[in-house]
Length: 182
Image 1 (cartoon, rainbow, N blue to C red):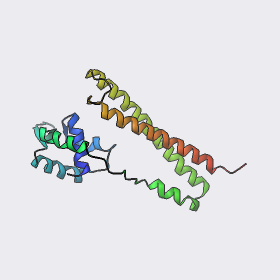
Image 2: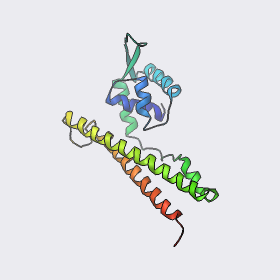
Image 3: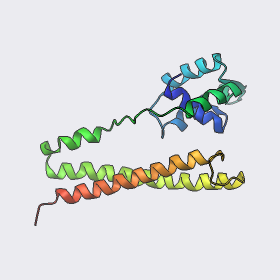
Image 4: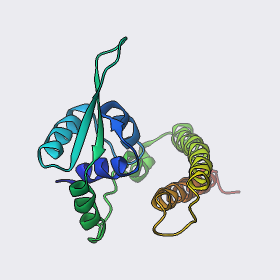
């Protein structure tokens, strides 16, 4: 079991999903494609961590809808309680910033402006997800506490909001730093 396997189990602990839905839902959390996900699904099914139901579709090929099993929940529970590895920082922008002295001023500004625009777009998306999570929490009659199924999702989305706000602040500060001294 690797981290992506546990990520898939995490998504399945909230809802049953098709392979395509898993691929789409994992994107904001982890970079992975079909070629990585489908073999893991097959392996986890063989290990008894997930099961699937074949859904017949008249206008499309039949699809598998995956669900987590009790064994999968127990495996996920044990993994959640182990310490997380230090985060892996893999942002191309870091190398570009380090070598920014090679750039023309207009291009340096554009690099930072584009990152700020991306972060603002992501910030809006995460704010919508935060509201949707609140609605789901209310529908389930849950409170904001550890045992609520929506609590972890709330923490994660809130972390992403803070990350995007911080990135926007950084870009704005760096753009000011690029302005000639007066």
